[in-house]
Length: 375
Image: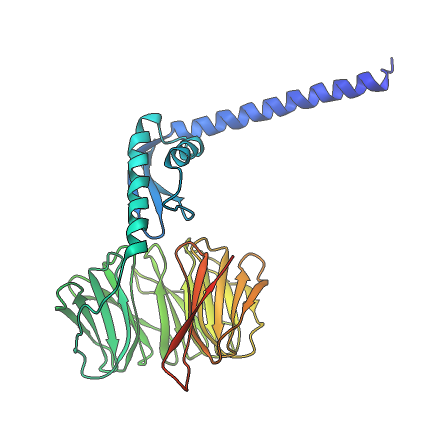
């Protein structure tokens, strides 16, 4: 017999509730099984940007890590509430680890307080290379830094003592771009006007690989965050991705019609951002080598680019005197930041992506920088 409408509706609701409950039970069971197969080994503290890294082992013996980003941590944060929230979201952390987790967060807050009161002063002046410097870069811990020069060498220095540790020789022209494989700091990559890049041992100075493939000068480069890959940008309009272990070319990113002068990996290492003298920046998929988006709203050459820590946003600086903020997923411009009276030469995010700094040169005065806040 046909049931009355109200009874039918009630019956449907009951069936829907049962299905929903069954689905929820399955999800809970699946989540429970997932964490049963994982055992937390230790916490690793990350001061910049603030966060805690979980190192755990799976039932098959594989070690893995997961980052808990605390980008909004401040000295006023309620630590007890934050710890409870982390325990609720991260089932792999047991209740017994609560005091340790609380202690780590307090250490991060103490570091933030110290940064608020810090002051800077001239530490040392090193007169080293026989010709002008082109670039310098620190390792993650800051106890070493490297310098590149027109004298065709890269030098490794002890930060605190100012002592020269190594001289990396082998390039036949200006060493223009240099980088450590941070956060590890055990390798260095150098890019030169001789059209090659070289990968070195940061401890011994041993040359591991010479990367050949560009037709013109290499002017920018970077290790990926995992230290497995190097990207090089050149005046030949190309960006090449290289395997660190073998030195082999993995992929060539073609599409720019001008010199590539800036490049960056995002935090996950699955995207590359390139900036070019063709007035555009491009977002690339590392795995496929395909261009995801072309950021083409500048009216002048791109001078600098960077991802924020989350990888959701990126910025571009240009000689058109502006800096633009972009949505990485859509490629859409979110903001145009103006205020400079001359070419924007460099841009950078802070660790949490809440602020960015842009730099320009005033031809009628000393160098100036303008700090712009992002809401």
